[in-house]
Every structure is written in structure tokens, then in C-alpha cells.
Image (cartoon, rainbow over the protein chains, first blue to last red):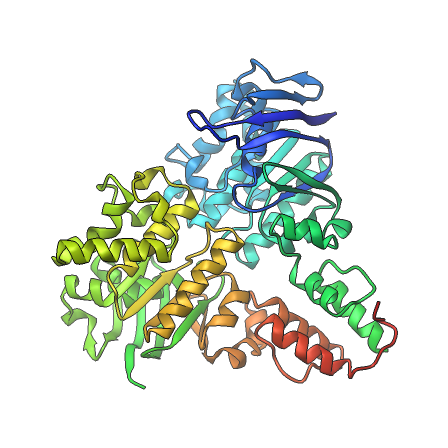
Length: 269
Length: 291
């Protein structure tokens, strides 16, 4: 079971330049993968092709072995869920419950299943206190969790989170951990596009680096964040703790604050 | 230093809400300084910004107690048009900032100047200058509503900078930007500071705020938890206890102190951290091992 793109190309309608060129990647169910790179590197375009929001102009997209060509975004959305960077791009109902239940009702799921899923995602995303608030009166960072709830309710096997930590405080970051643990326990794949390297290093074992409309590296986070030439080519900085460890020439490969502190204290012993 | 903004025991509640968004807040801000407002979401950061600009209660209505004083004059005595020029305000949601009535980015940036009756030639000169400064000069012919989040944020910034206000209040300017764009924004902010402007920024990216701001105001649950010089405020353990995000380098210093091996000072950027760590390691070459 995997989400796979082979040699995909895409250019926006009317644009003479391509946004991605012959990009290939394969993401297995249950994996946690981060796609990193500068704005314009092709990250979001690739992610939107994975979800069939865009049809590639070349190459193939396979969801669990099935070619998405000719399929509608709605058909793919039940397998691959996409949480937009800007929640306002996603919300269209005037009520939190309606927003969450919308697709489930469209699918004509049994009433008890709708209620079960709705209650589950309200708790996992922590938005129950906002159940009777108008979606656009919910503070923007929390509104993002409403869009996460909507996607979770459709129970897709592959969940794409576009810049999930943007504008989030400690509460939001913790809530995001809860959401990711929930998905992990259900064996789902989580794919994120993020500029937040602390978040990436902490939560995603596999990191795909994009630059110049293509994938320039794909591997374990501990290798990727120590490949200076790749990072500078993609204009990406490693997490602060990693950078400090590199500057100090620590032998141990450090990904977060805890590891940095441990390495420093051990060297100090 | 002269005081440019003063809060005297300010409490404020939005209409139809029972709970005050801001409770008994008092502080003074000095002209020419850069202030960071930090704190969890819903702690009152945006409301403080709205109060400074008079949007609470003038636009949002609601109940205000206490006094907001701008340049020695109570908010209630300020003319709305005058205060909108004196205090430039960059909104959190850039799409809420663009007017929606202008066809091009060029006109959007110029709208404030147009309203002020600035001469056409001067207006065009300023629009182009500002557009270059925030790197949207290649977008001048585009429709404001056809921009990406990051582009829109820059245009919103440009339309405020065009007014050349003395005081600039910025609510989460970088939420839609990538790291390069974020650094560009802070670059603009430091130039504003160099020009003697007073800058107030509410942000989650505490790592960057710590580097650029002279002082910090920390909000928690509508109250002012701490205010003062950046380094002193960030060292306050009350911040972590109240769920306030603090910079990675400060967390590092705290963790080392907790382990009984303090760094000796609180760093506010990576350069300082490196210097402190070099000293901390005392030039020894042991277990942690140089390559």
C-alpha cells in the first residue's frame, strides 16, 4: 500500500514555466514524511498532485496501485486528505458541525457512524469548545484544527498537512502531536510540507528535500540535516540545536534540544 | 526618551463576550524602541494591538475600562483619520488588510497616500520605492486578490509603510512567509528602527523577536505577565510555567542551568550562544570531541 508518483511534471495553465519536472517519490502507508525546501521549489505543487487537486501534465500518480488519471479529486480525497495551509481556503459551511459532517452526509454514511466520527475528531483536534462558534469567528490558529478535523473525519490513509505549525503556539503544537499520534496509531501515512525544521526533525523520520522543481535528496532526517551541500542548495537551515552542534563540531548527530543538552553534558563530564 | 503609548489600567471585552480579552493592563512604551508582544494564542496579543490603534473599541465596539494614551493624548480625543496615519497597522490576516476595491497592487499600496491627498508624482515615487523595499515591485500590475499568502503579506506591509507612520504596530507579520521571507520582514523592521520609528510586533517566532526587540511584553490569559528588557524577561521562569514559547537558545541555557552547569548568561541569538558555549566548554577537548 503506497502513494507513488513517477516522473510527474506540471505547469500551471497559461504559464510557460514548469512548477515540477520529473518528480518521483513513493510513500508507504504508516510512514511519516516531511517535504522541505524553499518557496517555489515545487513542494505544494507536488502535494496537490498527490491529492489529485492538480492533474500532472506528465508522469503517473498511483494510489495503492491505482492510477489516478481520469479520477476526480473527490474520488481521491477519501484516500488522500489534504489540510490546506490557509484554513480559509477550505471552510465553506457556517457551522462547525455542518462543516465536519458535510462530506460524510454526502457519502450517505449511517447516522450513527457520522456522529461517531464527528465526536472522535472533535476530541482529537481539541475543538469541541468551539462547536457552536461560527467557523470564521474561531481564532485563525484554532480554525486550522477545524480543517484538520474535517479531513480526519473522512478517514483517509494518507494525510497531507501543509504548514501545520504556522501561527501555532505551544497549545497548538501539542494538539498537533495528539493528532499525529492518533494517525500513527491508525497506521496512516502523514506527509507534511513545512518550513519549521524543529517540527520536522522532531516528528518525521524521513525527509524529502526539494529544490529546482525536483527532489534533490530523500532519506533519514539524521543524514539529511547533516548534509550541508544539500541544505545550502535547497536554501534550508537545519534546526537550531543541530546547527549549534555542527558549529561546535560535536561528534554526535543532534536533532533537538534534548539531544544537544545530553551531548554537551556528556562532553562536560 | 519620550513615552509614545501608555496604557492605564486597561481592561477590554469584545461585544457579546463575558470574559475580558485584556485585564487591568498598564505599561508605557518609549519612542524609537522595538517591542515584542509574546504569549499563547488568545492571551490578548492582538487585542493589545487593536487597543493601541483604537480599533478596540472604535471599530469592534465592546467595553473599555481604563485609558489608552497616544503621544500624550487620550485615544478618545484622537481623530480617526489622524490616528490611522500616526499609527500604521499591519493586520494578522493579510487578506483582511487589502482593500478589495483596488485592481492592482500598485493602487493598493497607494490607497492610503491617495486618501491623504499626496501629490501624484510624490505618490508614484513612494509606491515604487516601498514596493522595491519589500520586494513586490514585480507584482505591481497584479490583482491584490490573486496573490499568494506570502505576497499578500508583503503588499499589506507595503501599504502601511507607504504612510510613513511614526508608530508601526504589526500583528504576526510572518505567519504566511517562508524563512527567507521572514528574515526579509525582520530586515525591514530593523530599518524602521534605524529610522527612529517605534515598532510593536506581536509574533510567535520568539527566536527572531528575541534577536530584534529591545523590550518584551508577555501576555498570558489577558494579563500582562511581564514587561522589560528582552534578556531579563526571557530569563523569567514564569514564562515557561504559563505556556509561553521561549527561544530555543534560552531553553538551552535553562536546561544547562537545571543540570547544574549554567551558561553564565542568557543568550538571545545563536552568535551569543556559540560564544557562551565556547567559554562554557573552557577550551577543553574531551568526550564531546572535536572532529
